[in-house]
Amino acid sequence: MKRILLTLTMITFVVLSFSSCSGLRQVSGVQSASFAPDYVRVEANINDYTQLGETTVSIEYREYLGFINKIDKVNGEYYNFRDVKIVELEGETNIKLNGDIKMALYKVVEEYPNADYYVPVMKQSEVERMFLGKFVKESVTIKAYKLK
Image (cartoon, rainbow, N blue to C red; front, side, top):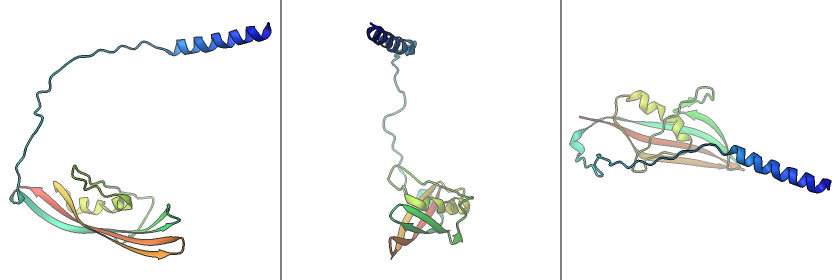
């Protein structure tokens, strides 16, 4: 008898706890039309841009066991893990730069703050194999452009 009473009490408690959690939810649907065009075409050529300049950013780091990274230098200066600046360059044409090189991209923004476009031109990697690790030097050349 006690077992049945205990089982009924537990079932009642579970049912009441789930039913008390359901709150009031209202969903309303409104149809609207978008007045923005579906396709916008901007015709631009190279004469519409001014090249402000180009710069090279670099990073040197060590990697152990495939997942432990130790950054040594960023843009030729010794890395200070207390002062981290990260810039992400990304766009619709897959110009996204991955990895630790994002920590070196602040140099481009500091040198050309008025640029409208930053275009990575060349990425170079030098890998020196070590026992259970590797030493990597990466550099990226980036050009800065501004609309006329």
